[in-house]
Image (tube, rainbow, N blue to C red; front, side, top):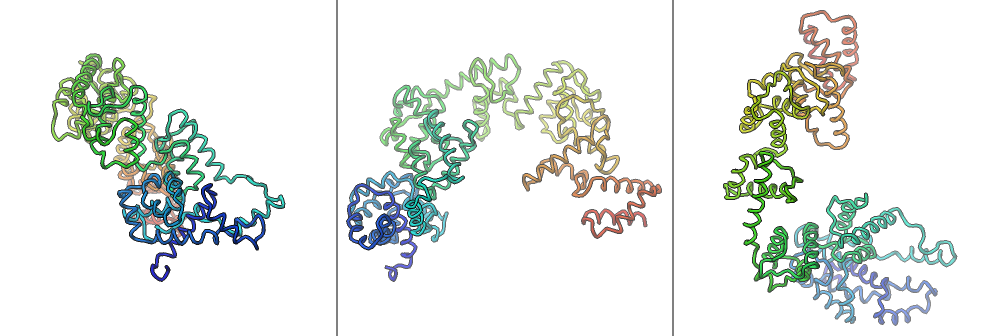
Length: 596
């Protein structure tokens, strides 16, 4: 066999792992191996015969499995049976199981293996599919995961002999990994008991435990998952590792709850009785039924959707217009009270989820190539129901507009007197960023009295503390004004600028930037804006050094004689310049040029 096919050596390692797992399982229908074991155990120590004779007894089956695995024809049939999709169980490769049962003379093997969703054979089938997709190399197809490799004979014998003399009790202390797995498994049982499934969102938590990430890790490494662990999860939820998105299973479970309450869905009648979103989702599954995974088709059958139903399914078009009309009535009622449609996601109007409904309408409007009848109807209620800027800005605008009144104009120069603290901070930030706003945003601000000329006053306007968290744009505006006068941002912590605590604000920003750099290599969001004002606003050396540098620099620019202490500091830095950082050396060279 090795002479005929070069890949047989790798295939034999996979086959050995497969038959070793069957040997360890001790299947009750097996009669060939016990008889063979009786013929070879005469000269072997009693009690150790099952370990020592494993590879000898299972050798013929390992060779037979090898002949199938290394046959290109059978790999092609595996791909045909799975339709190029990742299998959920070995039942999706029936021809492979039938062939193995025939060659091994064990007809019962088909039924025994069909429900398997773990082990060396399952991992090999998945690897064949992934190889066809180009996701793995040919060598990885024959790689046997550590958890599925046959246990070494020496280790098993040592364990048996220690147990015989009473030195190693069976079921000893669990490893840390096993303890962690048992904790996750307990939370999985608790979640399934409450929700009926294990379709936990990727970042979902249950009773404080990160169950979503834990299950995602188990799914990612399912091919290498020990058989007993995979079986434990399978007993909790047979579809815990379906080869489709978790979101699909979660929506399916909502449909299953509907079926349990109201009976099977009627696809041919347009899914009457279901909610709008659920009816649309069910019709979408029917429209792409042939492309779904066989497991998904099996689950849909539990809802009453079989191939014949899918082909004759009708969409929920009749109720879409009625649902929109109802939502429009609620939108009119909300606007009549508040004067706008700048709702948050959680906003409800008389129990109707208006915020979620408007989010859906905005999404549809942005996907449409041109204005639709629906968007025109909503624009008639509020022209800015779907602005090209974030809705948070629109909500803050209406909040400030409500505080200043419909006829009262604001005066930025007096610090927006008469306006609440949060609205005042937001308005000051708009002045600081006025030139960067959308033209229509600027128009809306002008309606309140915030014009381009008034916004320019931000450079000299006196800051009024509000007690609220300082907006970054407010601090940036004062930093820009300070740099325009002093040329740097190396100011001490107590320094204020026009009443604004600029020194304290910059210290906090340096702290945020440092903490961000320790967590991730990605740039801190505000780094670019502050570095554009002063490249050394957050130097990698002591900040006292940077302040002394700028004190000396400003004195030289003004044509004044530096005090002896600063001259001495400069001489010391020149003497040890080779120990300084490149940026410090460059700054010192500029000072040296100024002195000359």
